[in-house]
Image (cartoon, rainbow over all chains, first blue to last red; front, side, top):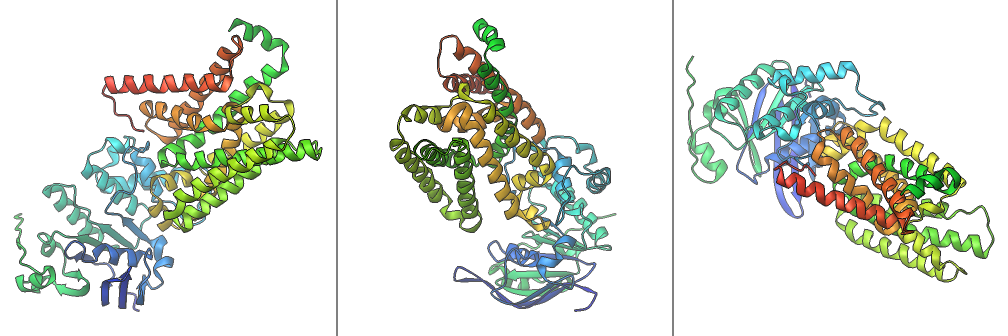
Length: 245
Length: 283
């Protein structure tokens, strides 16, 4: 594995209680790129992310992340989950939540220091959320919460950033802002975004990883209707967005 | 009520009872806040009822084999820790069986307790005090033990606040940050067990769960951060337990039961008030 590869799958199969979810996947994601993982619902996109995170183990094959095993790479990986696995009314401020991103193995006992708070604020300000630092998390809108969770993923200054459907609850303008930000950040870190929304893909990335049990990597230039039809099993509206000036 | 304050100066047992109410409220508010936000009050319920087994066995050995130093609270601690380990390990290794395991040790613990109490001469009044609390029976020795348990629970929850916070908020993310989630989960269930033992002296096995959860539910209406929730819950618990003690003393009613009635009334009043005001109840 070279320095230039952030993630590589080698003949990976994953079976969940009998049914194959991922079949014979071999691909790699180059470092310092902005890559999208696309595919139909239930096609295995989130499974690919969980395999990269080491939350799932391949039934066959091997995965390398940042030159090591998925488990060992975790401290350098920032992650934003698709579903909020928590009580939305949990009593916590935005700051409390972003600070979670700075936890580490053998986390020291006692309160977070000033340095950590500064780092958390920096992560929030990258997403334009620093004004909300002391607001209750429960009082935010869906899109604001999503940005806080992205800030939490960014707080540990990761080398690999994994975002699972970050644009589900946001309007088109915010989505464009977010993709612009990710493209800019991909100069420093590898950004991998899972999305079912093909519309915007070609504007921001050179390559897409298409997942529907099988995994294929496509150049966005050759992402034709034919490829998409094969991927989704039916025709999908392809929108070429033009953003002038 | 005035009688209580007159007698408080004279009777040591009333002073011990008052100290117990104050000391038990603090860990109750802290641990209760986690229990309510993580929605695991059934775990605390399971541990509380299993404690009867430990109390029964310890009392039996003390009375029948004349092991004088064997305070029933020791039995309660051992039973609570065993219950915590069994439930904690089940929730880590086989989450889908957690419910059944809790029901099993809940009932087995109580059955063992009842059997030993039946074979212990003159201990049927003990059963009542275990089930419904006996804050007026707290001795100076008990109070020392309560202080030690208090210090352990408060210190650990203060030092490990962020670990427990992260675990309660988002377990998967916490695991991905490299934190040993299983270890902290077990440690937390252990702290819950110790808190339950403390509560058994105040309100008894049956009502412990109410004192762990209801003050937190009330506080949730007024607070926006976890530590605020803990502080306010501890304060309210203190008011309810002291209130129960004071109000039950004159008419010679069971203090534990009065405490729970006050707590329950306050809970429904708060619920009614927050619904009327249209305030979002967070818990």
